[in-house]
Amino acid sequence: MNLNDNKLSTEAEINASLRVSVLALLGGAAVWLVVGLALGIVASLTFHKPDMFASCSLLTYGRVAPAANDALLYGFCMPAGLGVILWIFARLGQTPLALPIVPVVAANLWHLGVFLGLAGILIGETSGHTWLEFSRAASVLLFAAFLLIAVTAAATFGARRDRELQPAHWFLFAALLWFPWIYSTANLLLATNSPVRGVVQPIIGWWFTNNLIFVWLALVGVGTAFYLLPKISTRPLATTGYALFSFLTLVFFGAWCGIPAGAPVPAWLPTLSGLAGGLLLVPLVAIAIIVIQTVRGAKVAYSGGPFCFTKIGMIFFIISGLMYVSLACPKYSRVLEFTWFSPAQVQLQLLGFFAMIMFGAIYELLPRVMNAPLPFPKFAKLHFFLALAGVALFVIPLAIAGVEQGIKLHDANLAFADVNAAAVLFFRISTTGQLILLLGALLFALNIFVMTIQWKIALLKTALAAIKAPLPVSEVKA
Image (cartoon, rainbow, N blue to C red):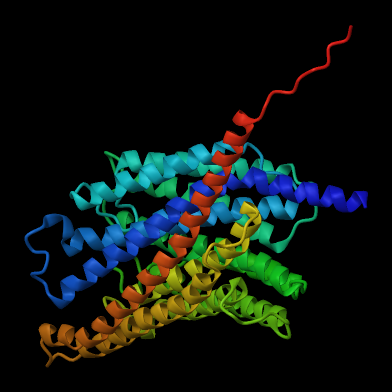
């Protein structure tokens, strides 16, 4: 009986320590998800009707498109991933969150940095480097906020009561080290007053993009899935040896990819990058085996809950990885580069793989951390089907358009305008997918905001009750 009481009190203590930090990170992430998808729709509409926003310089494609992508990555993916990392470290370690006030401060700094960065992009103050468009002030805020959260996560990891290391620890702790390294290196070499020049500049840009979009997202997403799948299915993670193997091969081969086959650089660089890209099949196969063996036979209801989000997210990861490998292969990259195929792969990595994993983790952790059910559980289930349909309608037409573009670009008899016109129909379907994704994001944000409001109202009622309660009268002894 005492052991059960201690276990319950520990879980309540862990949840209480995480509550404010998680809400600060995830609440802002939900806002930026809606903003990013809305900006993406605006960017898409410029292809359907180019003069729609011609009179407003803030909404031109060259500004709105990078703002939409950065809002999705830096506004939603990264704070959501950091919030989930804190929760997993506390839960696996059976210890309360260390330094709980630090992530709250860091979350506010992060969201302020994202706001300043997006505002700078929309008014034209940008570095011009892909995924590094934020101003220097915004980049400093993001870097400082990430370090604060990483320190909190490391302190929680060090104070864990359960000392056994799980596969999720390897992936998530590596992610905490990976981002400061690549982000500081890229900013110091590309976004300072004296950046590197010549052929080194695009090489660093490709290296940073690859390590951020593919490697970092893979570390956090796969690490989260390796925690959620066995937890929800109540089955141990299959083949732990494969998990270690997939982790080592992912970080080793993944770090060398990203340079296109036709890049105007020394030939050995795209050759080495293509070889590493082909070898990414090794961790992809290992991860696929782990997921299949873990979920096979699991008695979990497939009703659009966290298990469905996580399982579909891992399927999208394998598909996205295969698309990435095809882009690294010279035979196919000569056809697919400079087309919509590459943006399709990036959006599948962001919205198909990573966002789906985060949705599943958030729907799993919020009721536990807040000690209350979701305000609209049916919205969460509807969100799954909207997200699945939205990703399919968004990514598949873009990928098909990219293949068709690539084939027609190699036909010297076709005018470039005719090549672009062939992709218009697919682009319209893709915009429909974005609209569906936006609707699902609104349902997701509604659950978070209503839960936050309910919690604040409960706090207010508790405070008022404490104020109105009569003071205890002590007995006076004669």
